[in-house]
Structure formats: C-alpha cells, structure tokens
Length: 284
Image: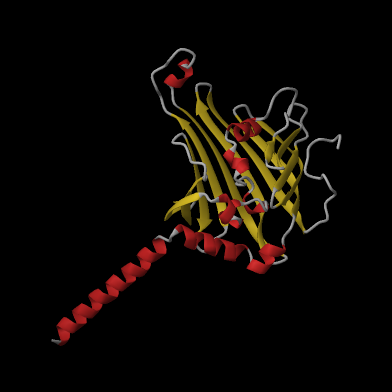
C-alpha cells in the first residue's frame, strides 16, 4: 500500500512538472503582449512619453559586393510620426531617410531617382511603416502600444531558439489582412519579454510563366530582420541601445546582404519639437 502510494506520488509529481514546463513553453498572445508592455515600463511611464529622441552613430555593410560605411544617426518619434535618419559618409550612398508623417510614409531617394534597397523594401511593403512596426520600441509608433486602434491579429505564442536564446514568437497580421507571400513575426525574450527581433519575409514561389512575368519561374526570397539589444532603463522605460536591420535577398540576380546599424549613445525623452518638425521637406 505504501509502495503504491509512493509510485502514485512520483507520477503526480512528474505530471505536475510537465504541466509547468508546458505552460512555460506556450503563452497566449495577449499574455505575451501584457508582459512585454510591463517590461517596457509602467502604464504611467508609458503614458508620460510624448516623444523619444535617440542620438546615435550609424553603421553600414554590404556583402556581395563588399562595402562598409558609417556616420551619425537620429531617430525621433511621437505616437503618430517617425523620423529616422542615418548618414553614411558615402558619395554613392550618402544617407538613409525613413519617415512616417501625418499618416503617410516618406522614403526619399538616396541618390538621384533611386531608393536604397532598404527604402525600396519598405516602399514595397507599406504595412511595415503603416503599422508602426519599423524601429520596434525605439519608436512610439510601436503598434503594441496601441492595439485598440491598430487591431492586428496576433497568433502563436510558442517558443523558438535563436542563437541559443529562447524567444516567444507571435505572427502579426495587420487588421486589413495579410498575404501568403509576405509574413511578419515578432520575437520576445522569454525571460525579460523585451521585443528583440522582427522578421519580415517576402517569398514568391515558382509559378508557370505568363507573358510579362517570366521572372516568376524562379522563387525569390527577401527577408528584412530587425534585431534589438543592449536594453537599458531610461527614465523608467526599457529601451534598446543597438538596432540592427539586415536585408537578405536571394533571387534571379543572386544572393545579397545589407546591414544597417544604429548604436544609441543618448536618449532624450519629451523634447519640445518645433512645429512642422516631422518632415523631410527642407523648404518648410
């Protein structure tokens, strides 16, 4: 009788541990978002943040062909606007300007008549800027701050290991609907619940060619990955001090990779901005 009771107790303990482990492996999307917001800052601190300005240095690297550069960077946001500028000390690629002003994206040409690969990718996938995803919590336009107005569909809640780091993963589908060719995934550190990664994947699968679309015989993949690290508290908000955007493409013209880095040296919260600040039009 004692032996049977002991065996039953052992099995109950094992099942209890398994249950705890399973609960730890999966969370509902709203639980992940709730913990993420709590990690970013208290409701009072989040509500008090009207603008965020990041002053930084910039980095750029292209692989195939190999190019390196860098300069300065400034990122400024309020809940409705994003002003993201990096200089690169290059005649061929002097700057990158990424904006979202008054409900519209602004992506100036980097050289006469041409956008950079990053600018072109953001222009082709308007939901990245429209939803406020680009820049993560560097920007007050981050959609998880305003789910009631954005109304995206969040799915998932399981975990994935990337670089030996356990992350929670959510699929993000804009309220207007998604696309089988273009998907968005958000990643959160399983311990801190900081948002550490966003992956935007555009994939065109091979199809029978039709007139004017011969290039669709082959598959093409273009993945933009943002990663965020070096989180530190700034006036009660947990903000990343390094932002890395990597664009990898693999198509008919071969494989290419470009990397942009923003290393923040200083944050300034609630700066008084001049009227009309959010524009790239120097004539205003």
